[in-house]
Image (cartoon, rainbow, N blue to C red; front, side):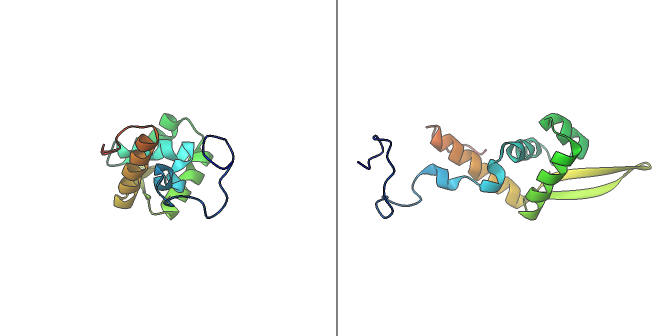
Length: 121
């Protein structure tokens, strides 16, 4: 048996409408829990200080740095360095592509959960 109710996997070539399931709309870069949390935090603001994001997401500096580097490489997060007085600071912001990807990712999650998916993320 290869139907969805039997628990067995369908053999290759028997799938109907490839890409029809909303999981295909999930963004693999954003989907990781820490990266999702970072992007969700940044979605609520124009920009945020590194320390604020670190404390909000409850990760170490090194974990946040690695995850931000992945998001930056994907074009989803912009990193700006500067000073407040004589103290160095780093600010993080979602790019336009990052906001669009987050919105689409959230829409797919809502669709998977059975909601209509028409929200703006």
